[in-house]
Image (tube, rainbow, N blue to C red):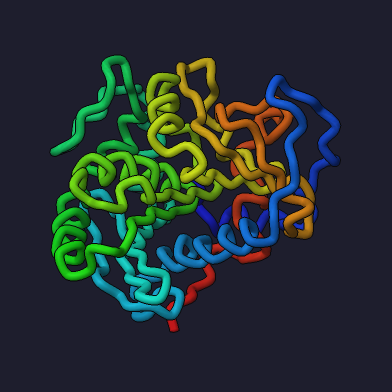
Length: 293
């Protein structure tokens, strides 16, 4: 959904700031986040940005478990292991090819059909995103199963930017069910950056119920990709959104929005401008900067 280079060339991302938030929603005013939360968002975005690298030998300075990919769908990414934080991180790349763009364009809402996963009746997701996830799901789950046997105390984390963020959400939902025996099941987390709406209201409500505050959905100023697929087509965002509403990035300029996912005081308040320069930079990091040493 991004085609990064086009958005980077259009203008300076620093010029994409939006006015300060003065709105009040039913959930109350969006509030600035803590320094600790901001640092976590930056930490995991480094994985999301690194997923664009064809080879990332030490993702974020940690162990590379698997560099995965599918030639037909052109989906790629990696699994990293952070033994200090006790985490297994699945990072999925955003759009970088014509094939990715074709997947992005397949916006039909369909049932979530993937091996080992059963969602509530009525849950529907983006057909192109689901098709993309299914091309790499078995590689990822097989590698994680082996890693979980060796490192049972490591929690699962999924991350991604743009298309990769949508895939990270589908991955998190899948992994939550595929590894139900994990004693750390309630600690599984997902981080998306500039991700489009991924499913309908039933799907969003399911994600909110299962993940709650462990789902982090980040939007940079007027990035139009998160709102490019409109709610009029039956789509809805899950929460919680973390909206960096003005530049430069900081805890005070990044707001924690309503847990429902469609806070009218956050990025949903700005009509989508499509792929804006803000999509190419998150938390002061230009996509696709690699953090692979």
